[in-house]
Image (cartoon, rainbow, N blue to C red):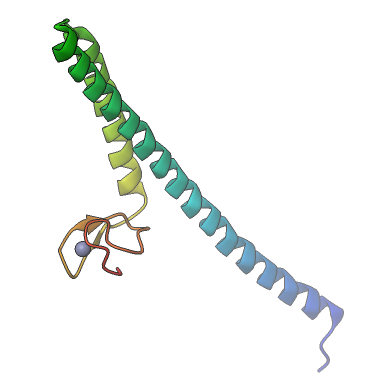
Length: 116
Ligand SMILES: [Zn+2]
């Protein structure tokens, strides 16, 4: 039995398919990772804005309640989006050292730094 060019082509195709499958899932994983990171940055900005509003309110004795309520609404939406993204990325990893729940794609515990 000889190894024909057809065998070679079909084997190569199989290898290629397998590699691109892996690459695709890696791309999807890093996409989800970037998406979550962006959400966390947005959230941090909103918390910052909220703190600033609160500070100005007390400093200038002005009423920022309306603005604060709007910000809190935005924060709630971002938190829900982040929670959804966390759930979509798989089971959380529980740290064996401190018991903290970590994102499925975390390599180290976000609380204590232990390798997961
Ligand atoms: Zn930990």
